[in-house]
Image 1 (cartoon, rainbow, N blue to C red):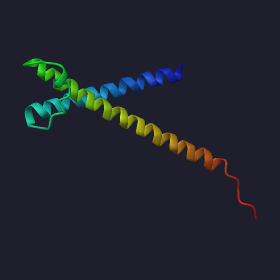
Image 2 (cartoon, one colour; image 1 turned 30 degrees about the vertical axis):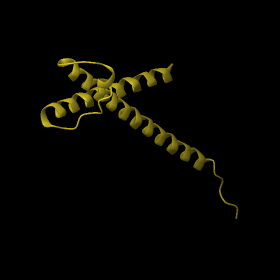
Image 3 (cartoon, rainbow, N blue to C red; image 1 turned 90 degrees about the vertical axis):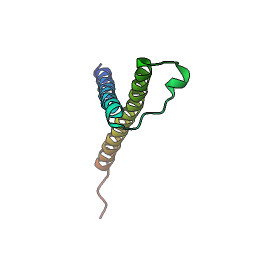
Image 4 (cartoon, one colour; image 1 turned 60 degrees about the horizontal axis):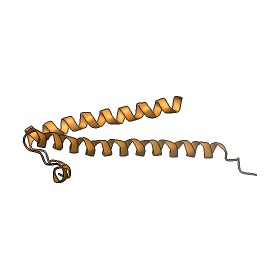
Length: 97
C-alpha cells in the first residue's frame, strides 16, 4: 500500500511539475518569443484561432511531461545505484593479513 501511494504521489508531482513548466513556457513563447515545440498535433488535428493555441499548449505539456518523467526516472536510478553501492560496500569483508 505504501509503495502504491508513493507511486501515485510521484505521478502527481511529475504531472504538476510538467503543467507548471508548460504554463511558463507557453507564456514565454507567447510574449517573449521563445521557441515553440514541434508541431506534431497540428498535423493530425485541424484547428484555428484559440484551438491552435490549445494544441500548442498540449504539445508543450507533452514535452515537459516527457522531460519531467525522464528526470524523475534518472534521479530514481541514481539513488538506486547509490543504495546498491552502500549495500555492496557493507557486505565486503576485511582483507586477510
